[in-house]
Length: 217
Image 1 (cartoon, one colour):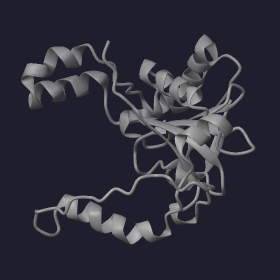
Image 2 (image 1 turned 120 degrees about the vertical axis):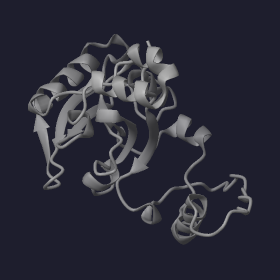
Image 3 (image 1 turned 180 degrees about the horizontal axis):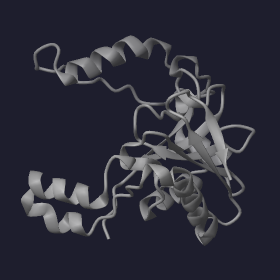
């Protein structure tokens, strides 16, 4: 069954310009981006312009070979599963200097792809055998404004030829009144998965309106 593929990566919960890494070899290749032939103010130009302003503060991270050998730091990194909504950015709501891997998808739901991403990051030593996985959902999530059937109907309207494919997908929509229960269910799915044996799993609610992070038991 098709499921949406999450994005995943590793972040430090502070502004990237203040990241501090050790990479004595400094062996990463220099990549020169091609000049865009497009007119100013296009999406591509905005991307490149924003990167040019941000790049001077960038600290080169360690290469993956070093991470696989030594990990990312003295403490076990966190693994966070959360929503891809830009209002729910763990690099913002965690604050401080926490190092964490992140798997983000629509709703922060636990799917086979989510679990595969956690296992992959663990294989890369970005989270350890005894590490912690935090499931973080947020209030006013877009998935509470939709239903699975509504998404399928929208696919049929936009791309009629793909309606059958959409009918085979699970999108993870849930009702607003089931917000905390959905967190509990996703936490339980991870706790029961033998692929993640030995890892601690906790659930949290991020309150979009106030910025508060609450434990959900």
